[in-house]
Image (cartoon, rainbow, N blue to C red; front, side, top):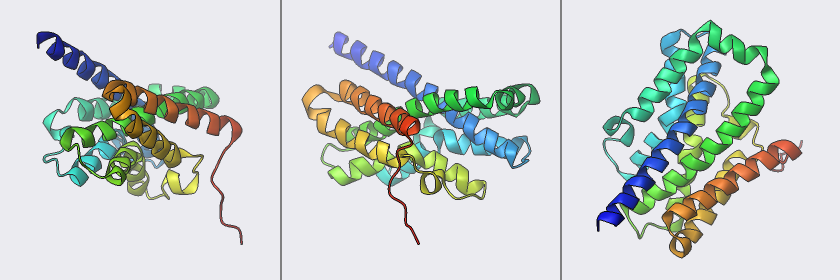
Length: 220
């Protein structure tokens, strides 16, 4: 029993670290957009917060988890706000703009990691709430956890959400990873299913960016 509790604690710690790793680049992307829109430090922080934890908040509302986890355990919200405030300082965000290619590559890699982690955390949260949720709901919750923060960021900044304007298999990668993880869940266990789903999302995102894969677009 003690070994089981110790293993669960270790898994939760690993999960927390991964989510924090995903929260930081998400918050930076939100803060940088706020800076581009010439917002003050409050607006920049709100955009970073929405990007970092918005998907999780939407997930919890859909699943009926109240209050949402971001209010129960504020470590993720505080991380997003702190990251946004640091990014607001000229010394920091000027470093990003001075090396645009390096910044884009760094954000692509870290954002793809965060996207995979957030999506699979959404799947895990759905399973933890109820083992008999429909497959559709589990995939939806996983996907909205992954992309929800970015959608909130873009709506608050007054632009067309990224997943609708420049797809590059963004939400599609989440759906594929969530489906794979959910199917593997009863076969290899929750932790390894989460790892497999997150890795698949990461690989699809990196390949899509490299080869410029995209879904078909409407032509006039």
